[in-house]
Image (cartoon, rainbow, N blue to C red; front, side, top):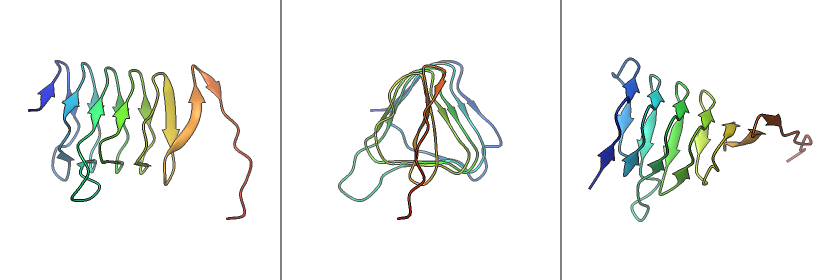
Length: 109
C-alpha cells in the first residue's frame, strides 16, 4: 500500500512516473522524473518530508530518501540518501551534507 503526504507538488506531470511506497509531506517532483523499480526483484522507494527531486532524475529500487533532501537534475539514485543532504550525478552521490559541501577527488575510472 502506498502513502502520499500532504503538500506534494508535481511540476508538469506529463512524462513523470511515480511508483513510490511512501512520499512524505511537502515534496516537489519536477518534470520527467521516474520513481520506480530497479529490476523485477526490487521494491519501491520511501521518500521523506520536504524532498526536492530535480528534472529528469530517476529514483530506482527500494531506496530510502531522508528528510530535507535535494536531488539534482538528471541524477540516478540507487542507494539510500541520508537526511539533510544534496545529491547529484550518475550514480547520485552526496555533494552537500548538513549545509557543508563534500569535496570528492577526481577519479580516472
